[in-house]
Length: 240
Picture (cartoon, rainbow, N blue to C red):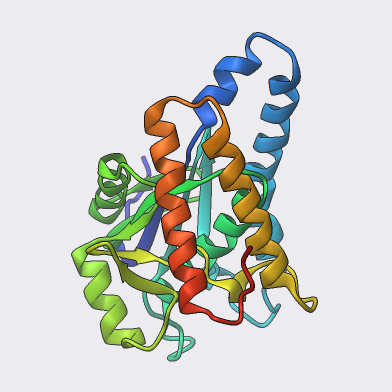
């Protein structure tokens, strides 16, 4: 029998939008089968590859744990650490969500999710606890492609990060992860942000022109509005 030991952690439950449609189409063969294989490869490899970039001096238990299930990625990190007094687990978790968002958006997929803080037991194969349940509930109730923080997670963010960080922000009366934060684009070369945002714009416009059901088109429209607001807030990002 497992010994469940809860600890205070930040938890994210994120879902890849459009996955079901790809799976349904892949079952009929054709190019969607290859697309599904590619998407699953990205989902399986994204977090391990990001973990591989973490400095070797960082204790392994402070790197966010993750579980990958079908079209969902579950992440959690301890809120604080006695080993590293400067460690801020919620900030680390938000950073990881932003990184994953950039990776998936570059492939043409949007994310939706929730983040909570509180008691959780997270092993290599399971996760249990009120914070996980709350993060999951937030994701299921969110109709648009945003990653929303719970009230407690928002309060923790404000108390630890203040109001200057733009990794999380108020948008349309919700406190969300800024999944377009350009600092975490996985490209350090000159002009990376401009290229990434131009690519995102092309992906969005292509989906708005596609023959999607209205709820799908609305999600892409919502994200276009969000992207435009982020470009406007960051004058150095050239967007056409």
